Image 1: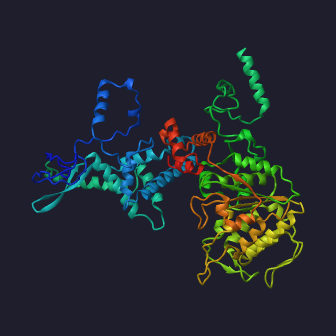
Image 2: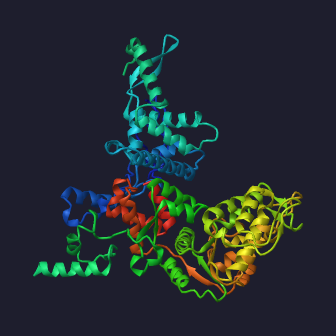
Image 3: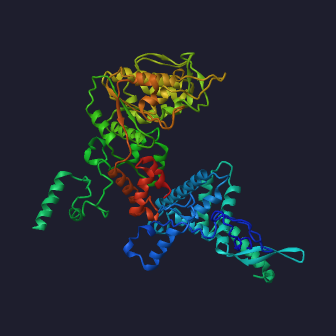
Length: 242
Length: 398
C-alpha cells in the first residue's frame, strides 16, 4: 500500500552520519516506518559461507565487494538473526507474531513445544501404520509447518474501497508477503480464540497445523470463505485502479 | 594373503564376543567391518550406538557409550513408579526403552557386585549438575538389582512428598506427626507390583493393630500389611512405616538383599512448603513418611545397599546452581549421611555424545535436514555443551 517508507531527498547538515533531520514531505504520502539508519548503511552479511570462502576462490567482483565493505558503515545485526544452520525465517516471523508484550522467550518455547508435539504425533501415526502408509507419513515438523502455512495462504483478497460514499469489498490480488502474513495471522487467531479452556497452546497449534497440512480444518475453511466472497463480489472488480 | 588375514581376524572377533558388538573407534579398520555383514546390519560402521547385551550384570568397560534396551515386561516390574517424565515420553515415542551405559553407573555396579552383605549397608550418593543423568543412572542400577532378584525399595522422587500435598491428616500413631494418605497408598500399590514374590515370603515379627476391628497378627506375610495400606487409605502411611521397619530388621537375617533407592534425598532434610491449618510451616521430620525414610537411610542394617541421588530440580529453597551434596543436603543431612561414597555424574564425553546422536539418527528422531550434517552436529555440541538433558530437549524439536 502507500504506507511504505518514503524515499526523500536528504539534507546534509554536517551532523553525525545517518541521523535523519527535517524531511521533505510529499503531499498525499506519510512516512510510517522509520529507521535510525541512513541510506548509506549496508545490511550485515550473516551467512557463514561468505566468510569461509578462501581468498583464492574469489572472483574480481567479489574481491572488490569485500574491499568496498571495509569502507562502508554497516547496520547492527538484529539479535534474532543468527548464523545457525537451524535458523528458519518463517519460524522467526511466526514467533514474532505469537509474541505478546515482548516475551520472546515464551513465544519461542511455545513454538518449540509445538514442533515437538507435531513430531511426536506423527511418530505415533507412523508406528501404528502399515508399511505402505509409512512411506506417505511426513515426520519432519518443519516441512509440515511450511506446507501447512502454504496451504492456508489465500490466492485473492478483499479490500475495502470507498466509492460514492460507500465502502465496497473489492477482490484484489495479494502480494506474497501479504498472503504469508494472512496465513500466519489466521492460524494464530484461530488457535487463540477457539482453544478449549484447559488445552495448552502448543497442543492446539499442533492440531491445527496437522489439519492444515492435510487441507482440512478451520483455517483452510476461512481461506475458502475468503475465496468465495471474492468470487461473489466479482462484479466490483473494476473498482480497483491498480 | 589378504583373504587369509581377513578370515583370521574374523575368527578372532567371533571368539572374543559371541553375539556382542565391539565399539569400534574412529581408527578401527573399516574394511574389517565391511566383511562382517552377517553381524552388522546396514549401518554406518564408524560409531555403533547399540549393544545386544541387555543384562546389566554383564555390562563392562567396553559397553561405555552404548545403548541397551529394556523389555516392556521388565519395565513394568522394575519401574512401576514410572520413569522420569521426559524419558517416559521418549519410551512412548520410540516404542522401546534404551538406556546408555555410562561410567558412573558401571562404577556403582562394580561396587554392588562386590558388596559384603555382612557389613552395614554402604551409602552411595549420585550427584551432578542439572541434566547430567543421575536419575537414569539410578534406573540402570535398579534394573540391575531387579535382574539379580534383590528387593527394591524405590522412591521415585522424595521431593513430591514434601510439597503440594492436598490432604494432610494428623497421624493416628503419633499425634505430633502428619500422614499423607494419597502418596503413601500410591507408593504401596507400586511397591506391591515391584516385589510380588517377596511379599508372601517375608513374615511380620510383631502384632500391629490398625483400628478397633482390624489388626495384623505376628507371623502373617507382609502382603497383608501392604493390602491393609492400599484398602484402608487412612492407615497407608503407617503401613509404609511398618513395611520399612520389617524390611530393615529382616534384611540383616539374609533371606533377601535389599536395595534402597531414593531420588532427591535432599528433600528429607530441607524445608517443606506444607503448612498446618494455622499457616505455620511443617518441618520434614513432622511428616511420618519422611521420618520413617530417614531411619531407612541410616546405615545401621546389613544385607543390602543404599543408592541415593541429590538433585536441585525438585528441591525447595535451594539456589539453582547448587549441585554438590554439601550444598543440597545442608549440614544436618550431610552429617546424617556422613560416611558415603560420592559418585559424580558429568556431561557426556565426545564418544558418548556421538553415540547419543547416532541413536537419535537411527530412530529418525533428528528430522531437520541440517541435523545430519557435520555443521549441525557441531552446533548441537555447542548449544548443549554435551549435557544429556539439554541435548534431549534440543533434539526434540529439530
